[in-house]
Image 1 (cartoon, rainbow, N blue to C red):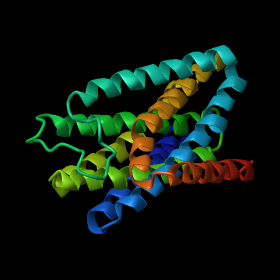
Image 2 (cartoon, rainbow, N blue to C red):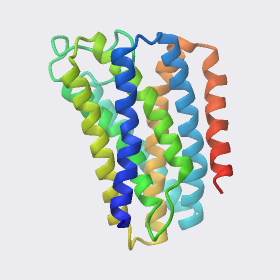
Image 3 (spheres, one colour):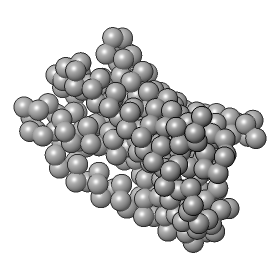
Length: 251
């Protein structure tokens, strides 16, 4: 199988976890507290992956300065885009309660939520594509982290969409489209980085890591803490440890 095609397939698999989470939320009444705890676990998994699989590898590949520059650039870009989307109703796109606006509440919020969900998933997918560059193997820890974290993301956000009165066509159209876009992002990430220098690779990995950390802090942790409260820190720690163990066992 061509390397770029394999990258696209793995990206689609990871993105498919969003559809899985949305399906659970649509057909099963999951208690909000459970959703929050799963979200906290997913946040810990992502923090671990971006620390050891992204920033550590970025620094080893191209040095501290390119990795740090990319990290800050990724965080700034995500925060700026997120702030813009928040003005159009996408601030609470990962919330499972009544925070998400309906189209009647905020016109254009549906599109903003869709774009926001896409914004959240692209950096993770690009990293999956990068891990295969040059004949490498898929990063098991990153794949597991993205898949595990995508399930509660899809679950929580779809629950909020349902509460806001959005129909199944909208909900599954969004998550199905993002799953396909995740595969495309992984594919393009692989193709475009084939001849990249180590420093540039470090920058791109840093950008992805910074964007993911900003996303976790802006969208996942608030949803988790709102319902799980004092358990949030402990559950996030368990998620971090689980991803760390997967990364070490995969070596």
